[in-house]
Image (cartoon, rainbow, N blue to C red; front, top):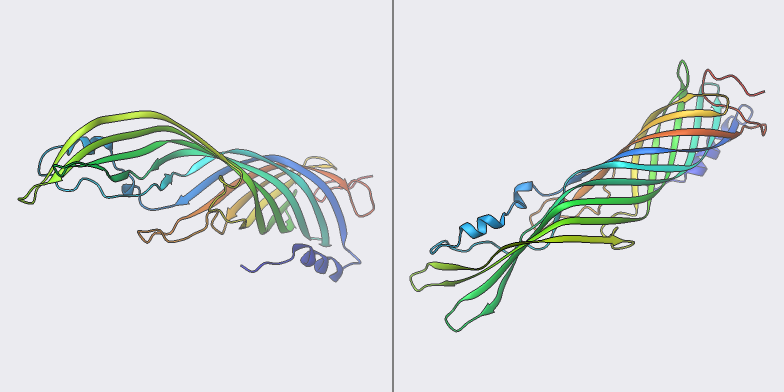
Length: 302
């Protein structure tokens, strides 16, 4: 999707019918429920179990595990956050409004993660031909807090009471924080190849589980993420009084949060935000400088 200037589009719409246009300014704040949907490689690519390695510590088993790297599989996350900001609403026709908003949104999600099993090979040699190996993997839960500047451009139409709205939005990533907490499992063994083509494996250190707690913030937490997210929006806004409104909106991320790039196995790494936003709006002033409400069915301000 090409970049566009939201203020330019709004001004063009306003001056196309400047005789009828009325502009309203207001504030809004509320909560959001986020789902962070991730599209990674299949789970079975990550499901190495240290107990499987231990069970293979018998002669003639062949090679145990490949070097799978240190990549991390984060499962889909869900959670609650908040948002606040300001808006400008323009009545272009009696039954048609255009709204421009600027909102800060914190999206907080949590879920489970598991890393690839990483095999270091070899970590030592000896004169008898033995090679020593060590495998580690981590699993547990994660929490991710991402801050965005959301800039929606919406068109709205009247309902029996209130308005229905549709539009597009850009989400500018401002920063974030991520925490991984769980256990790191490790095991070590040695193996050698015999002259008759077999591999003999011998356990050196039984599986150990140690606590794992790592936090990242700033650029470390947003590494590999796109600075701009595009989304489509749909929602409703209902009047509570002359100056208060209640809104419910769905944010459907249309572009990947992470930079989508093929990994070694050829799969795409992508992620998307799915957000439900619930807000209370407060009208500051209308076109004539007095408080008013854009909600259909609401009484005009005195």
